[in-house]
Length: 267
Image (cartoon, rainbow, N blue to C red):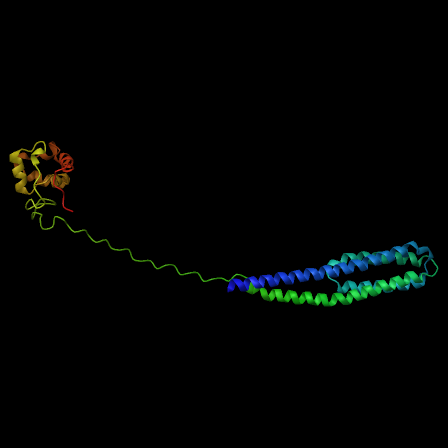
């Protein structure tokens, strides 16, 4: 609905502007016609300046000059250059007429009277046109706020949602971890058949039994040991202390835990 209203207002403004331009063009055309006749009469006066009746013609020219002054006061500024040129020509002709005597120029004076009458009629016609243009200008000024784009209130920024607090994942070894046994030493083989720890180079049957006793049953347990875990288990192996680092059990256990058939870690 708002778009339709704005469209209608724009079309109305364009129609008013077109009417104003046509009115100005018509008035300008009428003024050019009168100006052409005026120039023709001045040309005839110039050709007969040696035969003119000085006093009579001078009086007529004075009247025409006064008429031009009144018309110039009523016309828009665009017509001022043409009025100024006519006034200069009249002054030149008047000076020439006053310096020469001539026979009766009644026909020429009659034509000048007709021209003066047309100038007066043009003056009367210009007055309502000027008033009409002022009314149109006032209406355009009144429509300006309606056509101007309306400012819309900025939408409030979306509310920031609090970041969810991550919940700690449950400990898969909870309940199966040996008390005081570190991070992943188990009470028993609670996650499937124990792996064959003897596949680790440096681990024999006796050492495998010791590992079971302290809670080590699977390759994945050994593969997850950190230096602190290695140090803790190393202290529990007594005579085999230092074997874990020397034989690189952690590296071997990582490869063995990835092989098919090895026990899977709890998740």
